[in-house]
Length: 582
Ligand SMILES: Nc1nc2c(c(=O)[nH]1)N[C@H]1C(S)=C(S)[C@@H](COP(=O)(O)O)O[C@H]1N2
Ligand SMILES: [Mo]
Figure 1 (tube, helix red, strand yellow):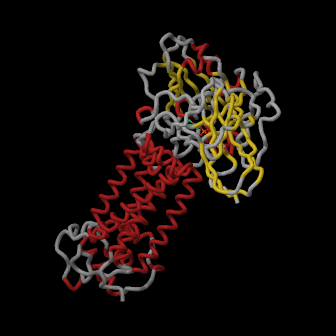
Figure 2 (cartoon, rainbow, N blue to C red):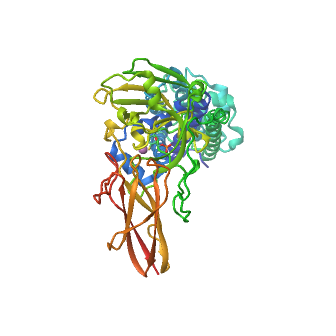
Figure 3 (tube, protein in one colour):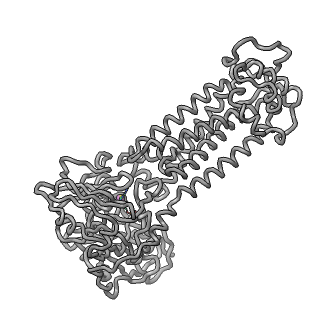
């Protein structure tokens, strides 16, 4: 017999978590229809991202790598689940507390959504609808937990203005037919009366005279009277809630996916470059197994950005505004950009968060309009030293004017390795500036370029603990053998890449077990803006060995041994690996 059991706390917690899942599923569904950025979990995640100081970003990237976003969202969901469980337990004692808790949830979600760049009033809708449906789901689940036949009895005698009559109906129903199972329960009519009737779960919300004691044997009171607990009906409701939340989430995600941007992207016909790239020289790629290929495939290219969901920018709507300290502000459409003389160039991008030996570097062939040409057309005013670029999602980067104007191929890029820019790499247009870390130069989904001064404007990462300027440090990395590898004795290749963008690599040296430095063989390069492969034959002898590498750039600067973490302006030190030779 299940009646006259106290509803256990776990039932409240379970109802809370499932109601929370329903709330999020519905919010995801509505956000998928209206605006994916208005999904409150993403907005809360974005608030966390935007408040990430340098040390925390470094920690997240070094701990979770490119899974950092997944981990962040998972973290937000775990916190939400704990809060939702607490709300469920509270609601078991007093429904009102639970509903207030849900409301507070909603307020946090709405606050996060509304403080996102470019948020509009309609962006509150997903959270509001989600919280509303979640409140209803919570009430419904608790009502099921408390008495299975509530539906029938409740329908018959329910009167929202007189909770006590409801209480008696409910109590007597619960005692008369305790176990008819979930099949009889989920009728929408009875469900719709749940929110008010579940108010009886609260002793406070029982106004007026209670019915006679005989008529209300099992009213749920906060820790006072026992009432019936119907586990089967609760679990039936939980299953329904989980299913509904799952379907809503999946549909919402499909609706909110990036397929619109993807289809617009596929429709773009790339123009021929006015200045095509010279064919790659023979010997840019040693073709050694495990060595990073000279050109990184788009799908293998690292991705770093603050966007929890990839911005979807319609190229038909896209505009780039160049303004600020210029004589003639420019507004450019995507069609305008495609008509300009386009330059094609190999450039290696590097992230400032790349640890020594890290993976946040890639080399691609970019096609785009030269930034310098457009800025000359706009007419730079004297005193301007910063180009503040802004992304569709509000990210900003501050690039030194002199770097962009010094003749290097700084581009508004539209293509990557012969393909229209992939959505996650900035479609329709991104910046690429050889020689600068991405955070000060490589704005993806770029929509605005303000010509300004470093003493007047600040870009996204600067107040978060990163240096305002970010020239790439000369570095090198060992790709083969892998750190920790077990080798067999004999001749083997040590190989990797080295980079000093826009300066070029002149030498790479390798030493084993702190012995003599030996010159590695260098691969060809098309110019100074890419990384350079290097390799060295080594007669591996049995035992444990340490292999180190250091590069010297074309300016004569040899990589410092001094270890520095990525923050605030890029990691330094020699990459070192250990191998075991049998
Ligand atoms: N809109 C936007 N652009 C951005 C960023 C960002 O967070 N948002 N991150 C920058 C950083 S830190 C790097 S290293 C490069 C990475 O470019 P990729 O993802 O194409 O490799 O993009 C840059 N452009
Ligand atoms: Mo970066």
